[in-house]
Figure 1 (spheres, rainbow, N blue to C red):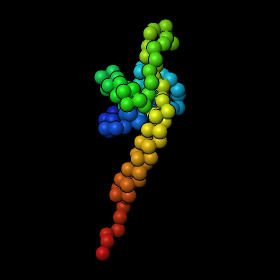
Figure 2 (figure 1 turned 180 degrees about the horizontal axis):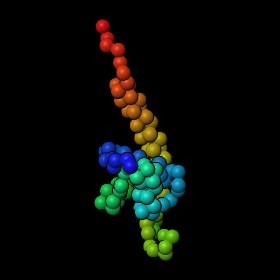
Figure 3 (figure 1 turned 30 degrees about the vertical axis):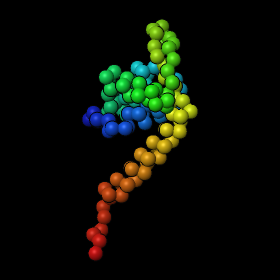
Figure 4 (figure 1 turned 90 degrees about the vertical axis):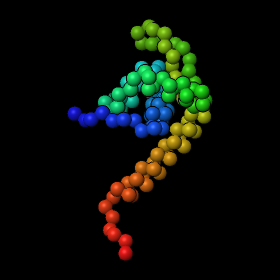
Amino acid sequence: MADKMDVKQGTLALMILKTLDVLGPLHGYGIARRIEETSKNRITLNYGTLYPALLKLEQEGFIKAEWGQSENNRRAKFYALSAAGRKQLAREAREWHQTADLIAAFLAPQKEAL
């Protein structure tokens, strides 16, 4: 069984944006379950972690929220990616790929420079 991982700062927003990009509008519980599923349960999200991130993304205009009915007929807030959120997702994904490439270069075996 894989160890649980801490979410690095800034990655939760990216995970939320990508989840909404792939699946469309979802309520908070659905977003959390999808992130956990995609991480093969190496990440566990609780409401105290997820909802402040959703609120921040909404305040920044990257997602929009609307009240609706969940699958089990409960009132739930559904979140969807905004146009600004799509641009932010592309920007953040590009930055994470660049960072990952940089770190990979440092972690790769290197010959000593003369």
